Image (cartoon, rainbow, N blue to C red; front, side, top):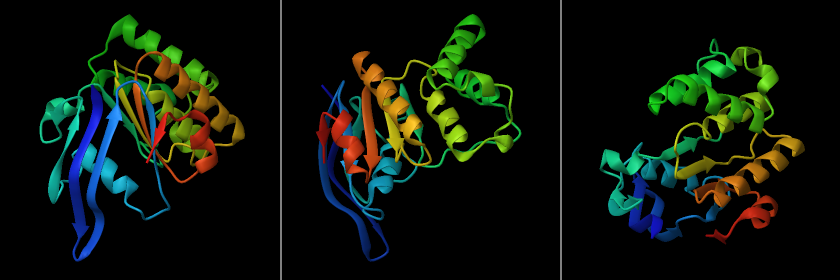
Length: 203
C-alpha cells in the first residue's frame, strides 16, 4: 500500500504554475525525499497534502484517504521548515500541547514526552521558555513533537534547517529509528548530500 498517492496535481498562483501535473507514489515504511531548489514548489505540495491549501486540479490521498477528508490527517505529524510556537510556552509545555491534541493524557503522555526529550537531547531544556532558546534548540523542540502520539506518517519540510552538524546527525538517526518502526517519512530538502545517506527513494 502507498502511504501517499499524488495524481495529476496542479497549483497556480495567478498565471504562474507552482506545480503542474505532479504524479507521485510513496510507499508505506519508506524514507522519501522531494528534492529541488528553493522556490520549486516543494512546500506548496506539502501544504496541499495537509489541506492547508487546495489543488486546482488532481487529487492527493494520504493512507488511502482523499485530503479533502479529515481522516487523511489521522496519524500524520508535520513540522515546517522553521518551527515556531507561543514564546511563553516551555519546551515541555509544547510537547504536552501536541500530546493532548492527539488525545494523550496521564502517564502515557508523560512517558512519551520524557522519551522525546531524551531522544532529541533536550531534557535539560524542558522547563525553559521558547523565547530563551536558540534557533537550533527550538527546531529540536519541534522535532520532538513528531515523536508524540501514534504517528504513521511524518512530514518534514527542510528538517535540517537551523540544525548544527550534531543536530543533523541526531536527526538522521531518529529518522532511521522511525523507519525501523514501520513509519513513512516524507522529507522536503535541497541538501542532496544529507538525503542520499538516509533515503530509500527521491524525486
